[in-house]
Image 1 (cartoon, helix red, strand yellow):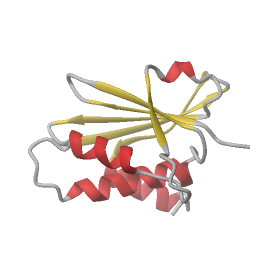
Image 2: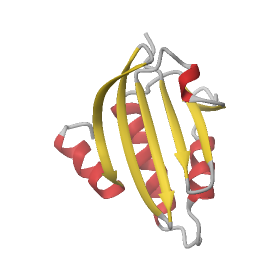
Image 3: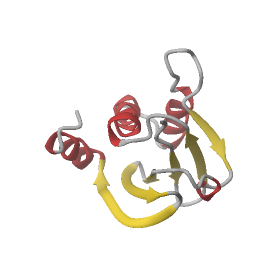
Length: 128
């Protein structure tokens, strides 16, 4: 059975939503996002948002299929179990991870904070 998730990457002026059909749990999608943040961390660009979007779009499964597909709205997928929100403002990256139950928000926020705090959370929870 697949663990589906959605992802919203947003700034002050834009928002792009993605759907992930498999491995949407913290040890899958969460680790992939940490990989993305590591890639763009050292980017000297004034705006890291395009680098984050490209890195997410470039993620592929071992068989070559894209991991994420662009969607209109996360609510389109009532079967999602997790939703990741990445907010980029002035190159400051903030992450929120929420749990859903068949599309209904069940009020469980696993994490809310910076990339560095996310790394520590994953270590504490033995996800990495």
